[in-house]
Image (cartoon, rainbow, N blue to C red; front, side, top):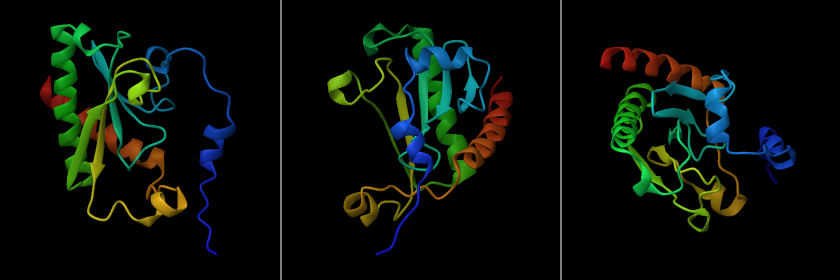
Amino acid sequence: MKYLWAPWRMDYILGSKEKGCIFCIKPLENKDRENLILFQGKYAFIMMNRYPYNSGHLMIVPKRHYTELEKLKKKEMEEIFFFLQASVKVLKETLSPQGFNIGMNLGKIAGAGEEHLHFHIVPRWTGDTNFMPILGETKVIPEYLLNTYEKLKVAFSQSMKRKN
């Protein structure tokens, strides 16, 4: 039998769970690198998923706490959609994915663990899904999270300067 070690997962499994909404708390902490926040706008922010489906798995989150999509205001929607576009562009330039899954879960029953709506952007590559998640219940992420963060942080800084 062969073993795949993923000791960082134990932090999540055994670690204490934070109280409150992480999407409300994290942007205010002034610890963007630690919290994997890549960019903050006026109405929304871009952060990496700490437990990604693939390298470069991002989330776009409105700063105001919402559970219902229809309650977003026009300016929030505009900034969120701009961040979705910018994220796809940065991911293409930085990680060269061949496709994307972009979506969201609305409501706990739909899989939204956090009752604060947010969008997911998951880069995809040919062959990025194999037998490991099915048979081994393990997802292999090929790069350390903070290495991906550093690449994307630089790319977002440059990309957002060009837009302003």
